[in-house]
Amino acid sequence: MELERRGVRVILVVTRSFLPLVTAQATARRADPRLVVIDHPVGGLAPDELAGRIDAAFAGVVEELRAMEVLA
Image (cartoon, rainbow, N blue to C red; front, top):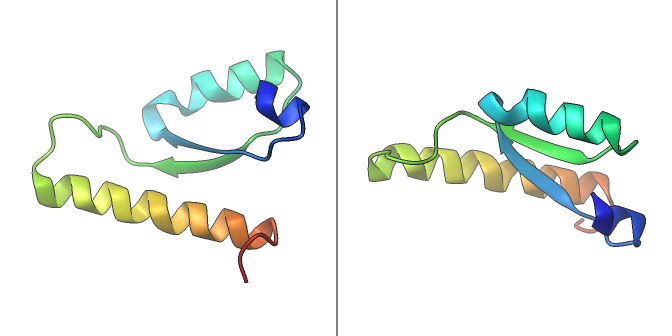
């Protein structure tokens, strides 16, 4: 969130379990981060399950980049 204050656009990838923490921190810091929320967990998954999480994160980041007009 500090990077945004310095003019660096960022996208945070967060699992649903950590969304309340991220939201609380953003509120406390008066930030409005771009978030891509994926299912929890990401650790201890079988390769195909992890691939699904990665695909979801990638799709979300691409969507955010398009919304930011970084990608066409």
